[in-house]
View 1: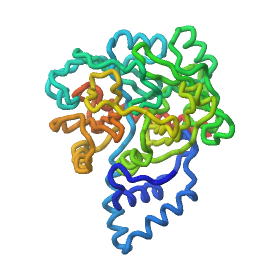
View 2: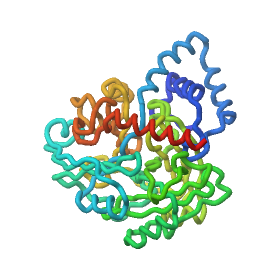
View 3: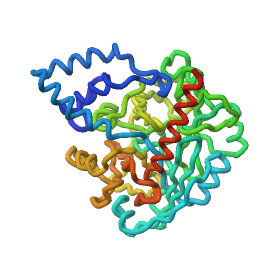
Length: 406
């Protein structure tokens, strides 16, 4: 692809931050949605970047400045979405899908107003867990706009979560019996020529309020190793959240170069399987998968064709049903927020809440930065990071299980 100008102008410091993250991090081939990027393919890019620096001392200085910034992102946390009827959505996620309720909170007052950028916010928030991953459902007393009836999979506001299943046929039959509304015509198996995604099976469907969900099955050698562990449960957890982006390079400038998420793989998907999967005729997508050290992945979907994906409305608000927010767990929200403001990133939150802040990415997708020490109940909207000790325990348990398989 042709290199395009970055979201933050791709400053020299950001280029070197990317360089250090490539050199310092060890790719976890089987933890990623796709196989890791071939480092030999990256070598010419790295060399061209290093040649721009006139002094080796400047290189050292830039590395020292850049490295601490990229240790700040600890993990990708829960994925939240706004709902219209919380009780109906809870029934869907816990009876049609096997999520379990973790907590239920009523939130209102100034902290919620500041975090969400609203006036007189009053909402009910529920956390649901599947495996080690959490989904957060928020119902506002003051209802926002519905998801557009003609919303398409290539509109720039599109987002979904991918739920991993142990057996696609069994999972699909379960959803069919529950009469879920299809987007895909049926489960699709990605073709062998697509080396990054060959053999992966996927199916899109809707919840009662038109939020898009996906079930996905990984063959051996694809996806995180934990999805291959032995067990009897059909629905396992959340592998990633996918967002449509208008310009991959612009989004990478924020997610990779600024926040330090690593690119774990890329693929170009097209053909009859892709068309049947997302019901977009002529669909051709450039897919980029990103990961932090822990938590679900974030996947970019850039539609090469068809053209015409619509932008998120400029006045979209967190009480609109189209609002999703992906939580990013960081060490210091105030410090990160100051750097983001300096870089011109759009904020949903108003200054005031120093422990959680919501921003918009280049296409309007919401990211909520939660400080590592903030428990859920203390987050202004009830949707901060879960207790860090529990999170650490879950991560340790998962790593232990993975080690037992070798």
